[in-house]
Amino acid sequence: MRSDPDESDPFSFDGPKIMGCTECLIDWNKGKNVTLKTIKKKQKHKGRGTVRTVTKTVPNDSFFNFFSPPEVPENGELDNDSEAILTADFEFGHFLREPIIPRSVLYFTREAIEEDDDDYDEGEEADDENAEEEADEENDPDFQSKKDQRSKPS
Image 1 (tube, rainbow, N blue to C red):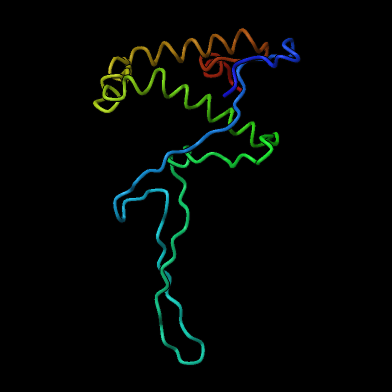
Image 2 (cartoon, rainbow, N blue to C red):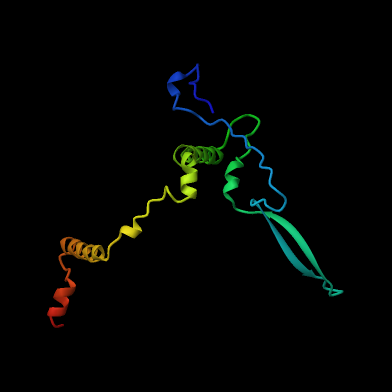
């Protein structure tokens, strides 16, 4: 990341600029790499009719792929797509670093998650329906409430 303005043109400084990103290698235990998926396929030989099993390892979508940034070319210039990806990854990583990671144990134990559902009262549900109906009346001149529809014959 470059956070200093260019000395030849200091007025063009738009803030810190991401120049590149390096990943660290995760040493997965055997068979525990969640970024790879093992697929077993059965293939039947057309002529002989024998069946063989082919095992293939393919990439799997995972949170840990976030840590594999795009390659930076030798000249150091990124295309717009790669720069946008790096910027989005940086912002996401910064978001994780500030509010989430320091409280990760609290999220794991569910202490950091607010549970407003337990406090929800059935009486509030009726109030919500009345409020919605009142809002409909105010916004639509042709609106007929459920009460009006029952009392007027069609």
